[in-house]
Length: 268
Ligand SMILES: NC(=O)c1ccc[n+]([C@@H]2O[C@H](COP(=O)([O-])OP(=O)(O)OC[C@H]3O[C@@H](n4cnc5c(N)ncnc54)[C@H](OP(=O)(O)O)[C@@H]3O)[C@@H](O)[C@H]2O)c1
Image (cartoon, rainbow, N blue to C red; front, side, top):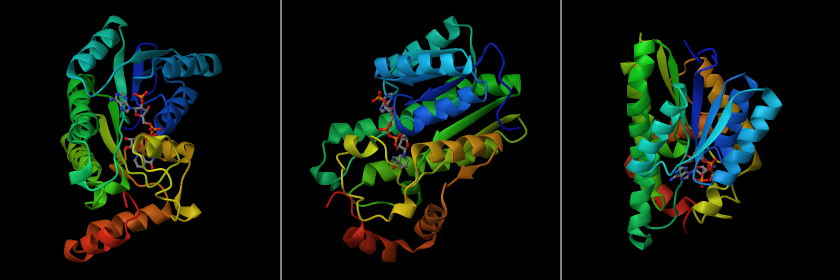
């Protein structure tokens, strides 16, 4: 089973819905008739998107401002969803950010925050919603990882490790959920033009990456939602990214890491 059919009391929780890939995932789910619960810190943006989706698609849509890296805020999010009487049948863990530079030159607090948002929140939100999905025998999880998950990346050490966690966790969860009616899918995009590069202080670092490697947020979100609907374990959108991911996984570290140290454009 892939995406459960929408019901009046079911919702799709989409984290990081205020921008980029998450906003497009929310749009595609609403287009398919799903009610959506939009989560991010910038409340004005998710309120505006909730209004747009309700108007355009006649679906229930609400905005819940939440810093998903904060355990208290995650508990408040769970309470608000419960008070609304909603059953979370689709969970999209998309909120995330990165940094660029040698680890020793980066702010250690911000590096730890990457782990809280990209890793801890994914595990905690799956923990909060997967058991009820299994009890109902229906549900779907989409965890957004990255092609960065396929190899360690010097000058993006914490970010790549966080995405390797998301990929490994999601593939194992896919196995744990076998036969329950609930599915877990990891989406591993390559470069996508979003606010990600501003937030990570990486503007211009990927300018030499050829145009055909880039996907739009909508193309990326579409690949994710279709993968979710087909109950795929992993989705790597785009041919170039599939080749890159395979190379990252198979190339011996003794060869790959010196190459990346010299040639990877991020954080130079
Ligand atoms: N763009 C790429 O090239 C690329 C490639 C591979 C993977 N990804 C992954 O794709 C996902 C979406 O990124 P994007 O490219 O769409 O970047 P983006 O435009 O910067 O969007 C990131 C989203 O995450 C939210 N977010 C960040 N920290 C949060 C927190 N503590 N609590 C709640 N929400 C938080 C942001 O909302 P607020 O700031 O409003 O909270 C925003 O909605 C991320 O997990 C990213 O790692 C991106």
